[in-house]
Image (cartoon, rainbow, N blue to C red; front, side, top):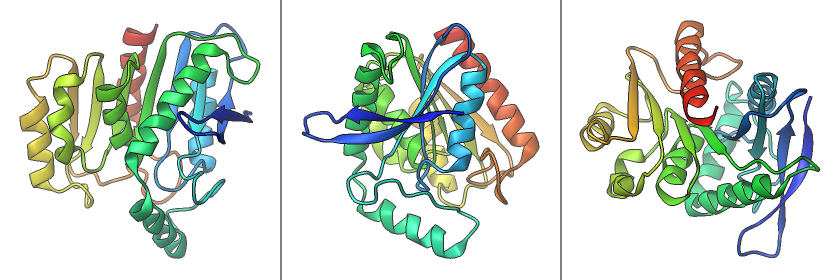
Length: 236
């Protein structure tokens, strides 16, 4: 069970909340869990708790703190899904990268009374998958993983700046990231020495969620196993 901690915003006189889960034993490294458009909901907290059980200090920032602090939404409830799309429409992902950078600084300084952790990775989902890609291109994060990241095809001009390992999980039937976008991602990133892409034939957006109607157990298990091996290699 984790706790809520405060993070100092980058270049702003403000604090924002993050959910922190701490290993019971020795900390291997830290992993920032970047939420979908549904906030730090039970599924995201569960992902943090699982990572902590594996020996990682896991921390999930509240991405929408500037206009909807503390929001937690259920994508299986239509009204809450539409609310989330509304927040996505007013969200600036450039702010998200700054918030990830602020979390990196906090972890490396010692967050929530914990000892400083220098090796920091991230894993993100949907909007968080896009932010994982942006963090790989714009920060010195040690390793990044993105699940069904949206709009990455529109940011491939930043790929040259990716200096540390990045893995992207791409469901081929993603109704939010169509075939043309997927083809562009492959064309732009297949040859990148730091990038690994995995396709999941027939799976849709959200297949690796911890709970709810969108989850595909077989696909989620495979993708999460690849993520675990990736972090073991690059953060261990």
